Length: 225
Length: 225
DNA sequence: ACCTGAACACCGTTCAAGT
DNA sequence: ACCTGAACACCGTTCAAGT
Image (tube, rainbow over all chains, first blue to last red; front, side):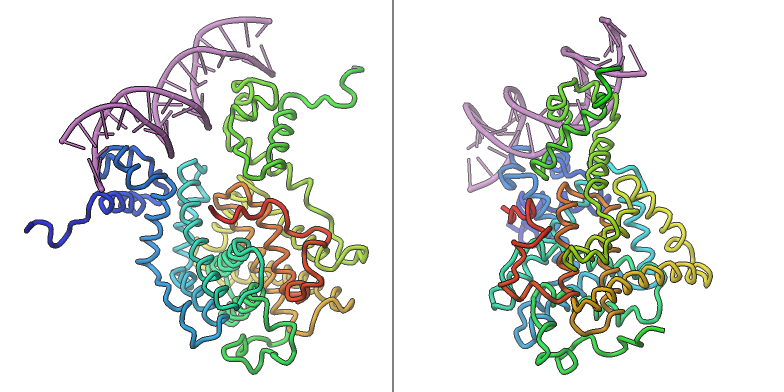
């Protein structure tokens, strides 16, 4: 009894930890049944008992990692308009990308890991597991807003993927040479993307965007030249 | 001589066709060695002879499909709806990015040139010249559509920049490991982005997007599991 | 030069059997 | 309830052998 009070993780927990270690040591790690089971010191059958499917294991591991890195709470805060909450959440997954040198270093890692080397099945699977989890989070945010009636009917997974592409674009643009209006552009672009998904304020002039809460207002448009 | 004039495709061509058929029948198709070989009526060894690696086969097939899909520069072709023309133009600036190894090589150059090294005034200026030109093109397309009255009032340069961010996102995603539904996602995302900018069909159910020319329809969403 | 098909080392999943 | 490990049906790649 004395030995378990602090850390009785159980087999399931030990599996997750083993897999998470493998991912953090090498983001391209394979997470195959036998490799994870060996690392956790159990049998393949036992792993299957706790995770009926390999994908379930991968998703759980990544979800755990994501929860540690960036929390979710903002999406349910009804004191803010849905669009502001969604923009906030998207900013949260954009934030770890950093800016300037940090952004370039981050993409350097992504580049060395997933783009420069000849892609393998392992790296592909690893990247897509990461991507799938991110997509899942965005879809979750959309589902929360949909329950509030803040979103028109339509394919939520296509919308989530659209938003992730926008975030990807903003992220790579942080690493590329930027002009001074980068921040304003990010705000304007995030609101454009979010409004496209929520389908609201643009076409209605009575709800024009210069008297709304936190719109893309400020340094936005020097109006060319 | 008489028997080859019309269609001497060769084994390699037959493999590509077989695989392309499988992809078009089901975008999530597996393209396993044995399945493609069987469909092409050859042996696995022969397939390996023409495509030393399974990935090489997949990239070639996707590239072939892209070449067939990508339309011409048609911003002024009034026989098409504005949104289709704009999507076509955006595809054209996306097309040179290539797919598979070509896309990775392209980003490798961008990376070595603009991201990895300490940025200098020269590299910044060079990048922004390229970027400005692209922005200029997109703004021109928007101005053409605006003259037709196809676009609501609003800041055109913010919209152009938004569209370029989307294209950037799609482009970097071409260099990152992709799943089989990449093409469908690109189409869906481009239409979402374009509709956000043109501000039309989404909120109006009478102009819903299932009876329009080339909408993001087909294999898009298995809606998770 | 092109093609064959067996063989190899993996993979995820299933399942009778143990405790 | 939890765990074991063999077995099954796949996978991509290699390779001696044929033509």
